[in-house]
Image 1 (cartoon, rainbow, N blue to C red):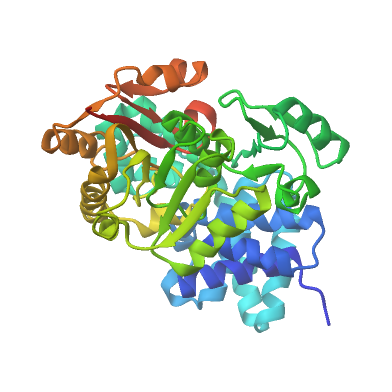
Image 2: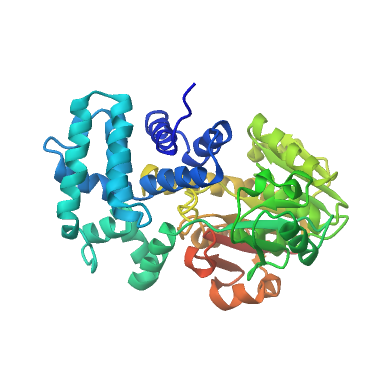
Length: 453
């Protein structure tokens, strides 16, 4: 059986994402695990898949200038092949132009007839003749910004409204840069310095201490950490640094009774357990049974015993626990628009619309209402999202505090923030907003609220 090339894998993954609305990160990971590609080709597949999705509107705009009847006249696989070809020519300097054209035409020949191969060859060569026409070097109009930074116009307009022109452009540029791989060191088994030594001994690549988090490392070079022995033996968890900050700001203590209201897949839940020295109790809720299994699997890999996964809609939890003890700490990492993780999940910017934010804000409001009674007097409620949208963040918290006078922003909030975060991130009364360019990490909002005694 012939081994598929890196470009064939990329084409298949892109087709699956388009036709079945699959998440690119999940489809990519599943495909790479099945493939027999070496590490270099896996990196190429990853670059091509994420790149074509990141730059989708720009690629399509260019192709529409070059195909007489437009992209819509082409079969889905031909559209994706053209995107692959133009992406390589426009954005991958290390691939020679003649190789990009040759490989793309060969890819098409394997799938279709000579006529389609001629079409693709003609489009790619026409692009090379006209490539200087589409530089977008000094974008000013909304359309120019959209094509230069490959984001939908509505999102650029909204970011400018909230953050201003300069900061919004920093966010847009950061969203196009490669994802930084970070690991949370399992403090139950090893410290950061010893982990770095063992990582280097394992020859998995280079690991450096995180600028942002004391129990994290950044992987500068190397393969997928999930395939490393240190990961498999539970010495670390793959987690973004901004996401790690959530549990650290909640700051649970050993022996506490903690609720993680929307817990799957368990990254923050297990971090809470590590901070608690595996002492106490964590109820970890999710509405989906298969995600409950993920939480349990993560806990077992890390050697954590205090997590109790529970399949339930958190909005019904208070009724079920009416006669049980309240929680010392409650984490609500709420479902959100995900506008802070576009670099990691580029599909988001093309699948989301501004109108969807209001529906999400309503769910967040319902979840906050549901967990508020579960916090004991003197306890802490931490609300977090991975979005940049104030309607889901600052405005959501302000509305909650207005209707719940028994909660107040934590006046000592800054004490829980690492020095680098205090220096770079945006902050307010009891909250912090990390933007993607601050640390080359996910955009995250975190608010720490105290329930009055």
